[in-house]
Image: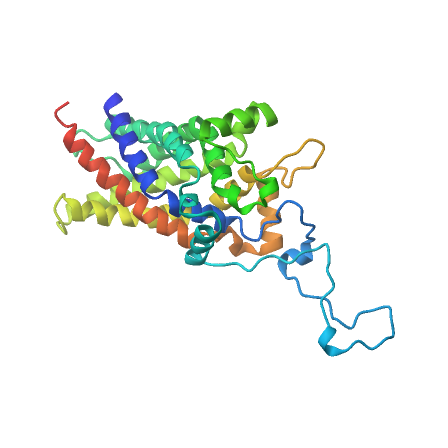
Amino acid sequence: MGVKGFVEGGIASIVAGCSTHPLDLLKVRMQLQGENLPGTNLNQQNLHSLRPAPAFQSSSATVIPSKSLHIPVSTAQPQPPRVGLVSVGKRIVQSEGVAALFSGVSATVLRQTLYSTTRMGLYDVFKQKWTDKDTNNMPLTRKIAAGLIAGGIGAAVGNPADVAMVRMQADGRLPPAQRRNYTSVIDAITRMSKQEGVTSLWRGSSLTVNRAMIGTASQLASYDQIKEMILEKGVMSDGLGTHVTASFAAGFVVAVATNPIDVIKTRVMNMKVEAGMKPAYSGAIDCALKTVRAEGPMALYKGFIPTISKQGPFTVVLFVTLEQVRKLLKEF
């Protein structure tokens, strides 16, 4: 209890965050697929389905040979085709290099240090206080409540690093002239403060807090609950097998619960705001409505494959590392 819980949670979170960072980057890139890129002029109809204009539309009556038929160039450029996890990864490596898979890793370290250390530590504090002394168990409702509170506070603390991480991960998809080219998380936070104001560091904070509350509650509560059920029923002993099983199940639960919020959060945080220009989204609700109208409801589950691909390993590494760190620090 106390500082020890924060240290254990922080170490486990940083290890898990860094080891799964490339998957998180792929998730961000896939969540931004279909979004109107800067410099394009897509209307609502074009956003959903663009088709080339018939080649015979012309003000001239002259017959054009079939070999010379072409699609007229329009200011409304069609969206690039949506691609899967492997294809996105391949394109990033080919166009930006292998190192691009770790774009924003410094922000991940800072985010885990601020956000996850806080939420893991606070959850541990609540768990110690709210656990029934007679049964040595904490009811599921209390686990959920502890996760909601701990996640919300942690997200508020770590939001600046979260915004920086999203921007650094998404930067490579922009045309070279429009990239922000942050050199580190400190550079990103410093430039955002100077160019867009300090409040920009908390852009999308309502989404971050909501996602973190739901994510922490579903992740930590489901892990503890599933682990307790496995041990109570005698399916497995308290060892690596139990930790991996419970953590992978928890990863699936949190992926399903948080993906829609994560998509909106990613788009709002990545939004480029320029002086005198109207922002693409006025807020989270506006972003959600525009996304659903333009791309359909399932757009809220864009990036789900990399989300579950990331959440599974992340949650496994997180809790397996946490359990090992607890054993190492047990005597302290």
